[in-house]
Image (cartoon, rainbow, N blue to C red; front, top):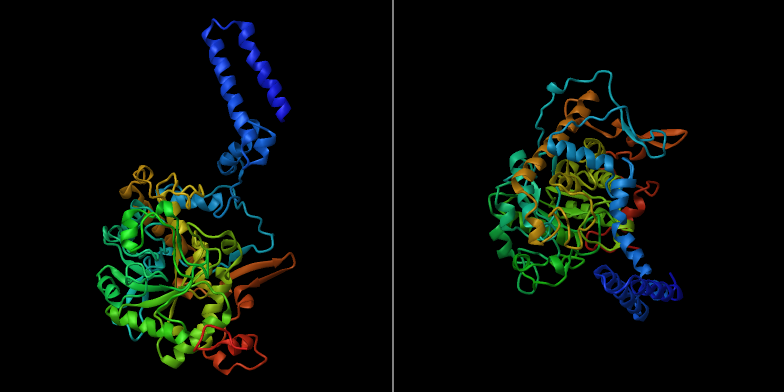
Length: 531
């Protein structure tokens, strides 16, 4: 409705009560409504922020009304079972079903196009095993020769999510689930809160560039503050966060609306301000210094396992770290590989979409590099990045991971409906908000049970896949078990797509080897590339 049409319609509508008679109450009510509508339209024509509202007063507001309901109409009425992002409806549904203990089977066959490029599957065996033959609680022991307090980890755990990004009830429920299911809960870089410790679940304390929970007044790393927390009994491992998949090379972001007085006290920052962690660590500046920092944290924590998390960027940087491992004789107890498809509560669009190596490529590269430098046996590898189902976990294990972390899978188990309001403080399920009116809707007891049940059911499904492949244990999975359709005419196994080098092969590499260029660029004294 243009400006001319706006005035014409409102003049005609204003005349109606006079024809009907102003003695009746409905006529006055109608006239007042027309008057209010007219005033709103005049305001639209005078404001300068939106051209559509200036040119099409009143009715132009419909654009914003439709935009506000579009995500909900799309999710509940339009998207198919294999549609929806970041996590499609089919995967969301299986998490809900497993978390609730509902029927988790599907009728009538697959809904996936098995002939599309990129379709992947696992090769089963005629000599499949009975599920009862497998260990139903497989564990991976994390801790190298310098670690006197190794940790026996489950194959599926809670990935890093901070208090601040998540509500206190969400943290409570996750840790309750971890305690019930006997798997670990990564704190995220926001520090260890009382909510993390309330139910006694095993914790992996993540140390980010902001050093929250172990920082000095100037914001640098404090060894004394670190040792005070790291020696707590339910903190089982320490993880140094170098980067995360959703925004590698960018510090963590806590919106001002979610930075409450309590969170500010835990993080030792001013309340009500946006908290953006530094892009890089101040405690070290080179691969050798990183490993010396690993050794320092291991000693301060009472010789607990210490490792680091990264999303692979330039290959030469991780190679430089491996070179430093040989030169310093210090190895991390584990490396967590986060994929570029990893999730977050808040990140710049370009970082979420276009920065960082995806999990499949990054995981294969890290495993290959550790193997190529002959240190793979000393370092456990953890995979993280959109791991929702047992097949996602199986693919990661086949590529060489020892165990997996899941963030969005655990959030869905908590009741997340993928409303995509994580960065607004308006999460309707009370998970990613600090609004107490919304947080109280999340029942810790019920949701903790769901987290534990989801983890147990997914692990059961993983063991089911392993038994169908004729294997005795998930650790027997390798790259020959996963197939990928390259195009309509060719299929390749993972061992063809990502060939595994022999142990120590990179130490003998020549100019004809594909890895040689990255090896030449890597310097253990600096993260900057040579040449």
